[in-house]
Length: 195
Image (cartoon, rainbow, N blue to C red):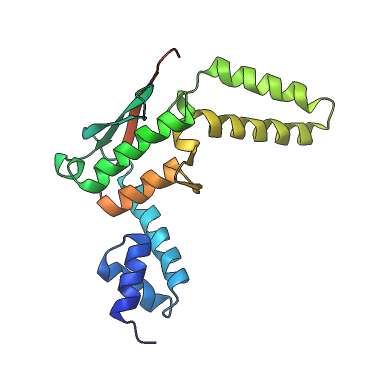
């Protein structure tokens, strides 16, 4: 099948990948844009995994103040170079993350940041709710309740407010693949009048 410029353009708009990557993915997928998008996604994940160990000491503080100036957030987002930090895509990501903090009210950035005593309490509460179910069933209930707790309280585990089919960590992974540098959310602060 012939790969047209229009097909490449459509896939590029859908995925944000480069022209050559889109053309290669379409050729590999036999012209099927859905399969090509999946191939590009897998490639992006591989790129992000390779870059995860790199040091990210540059970046910016994203901010968002909600209408009425009653609630605001600041988010420190780091990358590897000031060149990437100045790009429109990176700045948009930082602002979107600040908006996420305002809207979704996370308490921690990542699962590892949740204090052990909080996790122990959540686990104990879930075990009480599981009651006298068999051990294997009770453990699945506990794991499910902990996963829900993390989704509600950890920024990287939350569903993105603009597209709830995407988690914040997936949004960041996509940005790493697009921008070609490691991106790390270091910390955030949420301020609310009377809160």
